Image 1: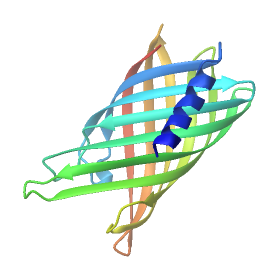
Image 2: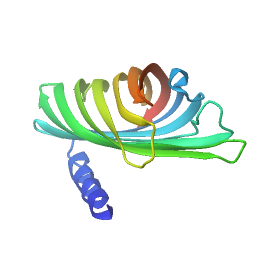
Image 3: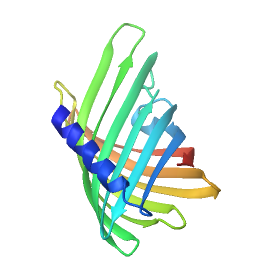
Image 4: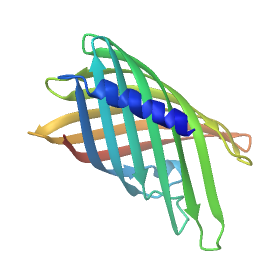
Length: 198
């Protein structure tokens, strides 16, 4: 695992080092995932993209204080890496996400889940105006057992755009579906963010 992370970091730093085709942004976001059984929460997000000729790589990392709706405390996290093929400013992306959550209830019960999610996306990224639009689909594969969720997927639209100079805003809306205990449940999620472009 350490070798994989090290290799991804090296690849990301190599591509991001390319002049005039790279960017790093940091955001504070407000997340509402209530219809999926989570309380509202705040998150810190790091977004980086590098592009060289028609190829690129993107990285998104997030940690939040989101917890299950009836839990006393908890947190969630995710890290996404994607390889991109550009056609002008349009791109197709394939990648993988790793994430999870931990929630502690008043009774002392702890719910903890992790998952790996293959992802595909289509988007638009303009390095001059710094406008980024991405429509991404992910299929979640639970990693630890026992888990009542046997199948889950999500579709999300994310927009990042400048507000003033290096001040940025982000907006994500999405839907997700999961099969749990033999039943299929669906829900939606939305987040709003304010950030800075380095």
